[in-house]
Image 1 (cartoon, helix red, strand yellow):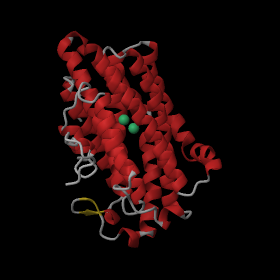
Image 2 (cartoon, protein in one colour):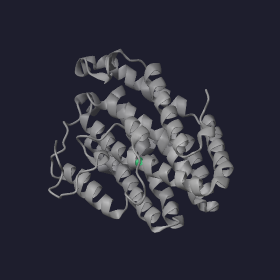
Image 3 (cartoon, rainbow, N blue to C red):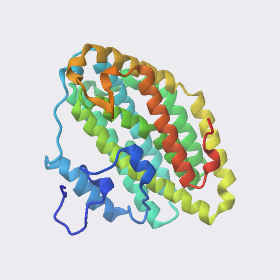
Image 4 (tube, rainbow, N blue to C red):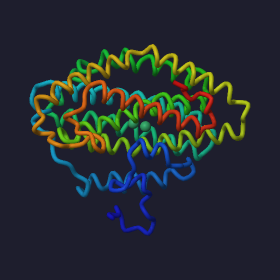
Amino acid sequence: MTQSTDTTVPVPVEADWDRAPSVLEGAKTLELTPERCGLPYWFEHVASGMLGRLADGTVTSEPPTAAVTEPGPLRDALLAEFSFRHLAEEKAARALSFLVFHAPDTACLEFFSTQLVDEARHARAFRDHLLRLGVPAAELAATVEKAAGAASAAVLDPLEEFGLRVLRDNGDFYGGVLVLTVLVEGVLAPAAELSERKWRPLDPAAALVERGANMDEIRHLAVGSAVVRRHLTERPEENARLLEIIQEGRRLWAGLPMVDLLFTRESLFQQGLAEHAELIGDYEIWPGRRLVDTGVQERMEAADRWSRETQDQRLEYMLLGEAVDPT
Ligand code: FE
Ligand code: FE
């Protein structure tokens, strides 16, 4: 087993490139607190550990294949997806500034400062990958706008507005943590897990970007839900108010064209899948299921199921089990 540094402090499993669980597993099993994941943890295990191993070349990947560097449906699908992620991560970083501002104690101030930097890093990692795909630097902003501007306006803007109403307008720290953990990370992290798995044979470097971001998301999900759980343990009278925020957020999500967006993206991927089956071979997207045999609906259903499971599990843990969707 590889250790990232020579320090006597063992690398925690969730920050170890070789051992970290998937988002789905990690989101279900890990318990992390803001006290544990403060600045010393972040500098040692994230900055020097995880990122250090990327920088020193002990964690590497093969470059993108021609299936995504040449014009075609796979390239379009990847440009759309990574442009969208870039915009989503930037919005998350900006929103986090309000969590830092309203943090009730030092542990939360430190943890959410690290999360703010994580999201800014993710925004950069997704953008940098567009450059690796051959998008000229001078055309980056225009490419992002063309590939994901409309999707961002349709899905991310309303979500951001909702989050900012809770955080900026109401100054509601715990409501904000809840929105971010369940409605943003809880939805996006399982989609990112699908992305990591489906791009791996076609663009291993893209899968590595997702993997790195996903390792951070495990920590964000785990700590965010620990913060809400502790708050509700100490202040059970807050339960009804936080439940109402979740329900309002879910009504909002239900009205957003996320399914259409995913359908368009997966349909492009499907076209490319047929064209480049030889590159993918017998690669399995999950145990026993070859990627080349999957269809649009099947992949969308998997992401939807994972998203429900992740959200429900986090809500139970946060003592908000009443919000678990019975369907
Ligand atoms: Fe992120
Ligand atoms: Fe995150």
